[in-house]
Length: 158
Image 1 (cartoon, rainbow, N blue to C red):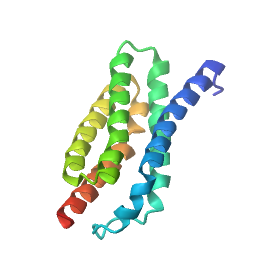
Image 2 (image 1 turned 60 degrees about the horizontal axis):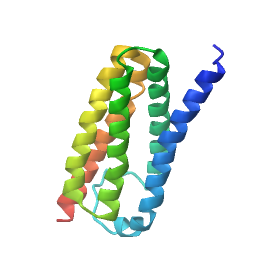
Image 3 (image 1 turned 45 degrees about the horizontal axis):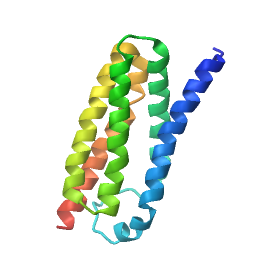
Image 4 (image 1 turned 180 degrees about the vertical axis):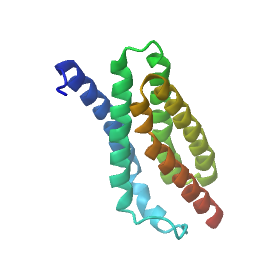
């Protein structure tokens, strides 16, 4: 299947938005990583080099799914994309709350909000494109795991 120029541009725009926000979040929290290394963490915490790789893949999957929904022309795409952008913004601020402010309990509840938004996004995407929705499942699973990790950081460091 060959993509038209319009489709390529749409995918590129969504990739730039999602990866751009992810990159900006990383940039804004990079100085706080030193203090994060010193906190007690769950024994299930992956090595730090895993996180950028996983988040890059998840942001790419988010962008592909959102592009598919946008290009569908479905009347419900506006609401689905509103939730997409809402969860993206909540995702962006979680890193700042968690790493920069070390507000671990607040960040946990913020992550619960993110989880609900991702779930809602998956439901709305599914009504438009099953593939777009299924591409978000790894994101929901990772945020579920991140919730556990976040909670454990709070529990072990209070």
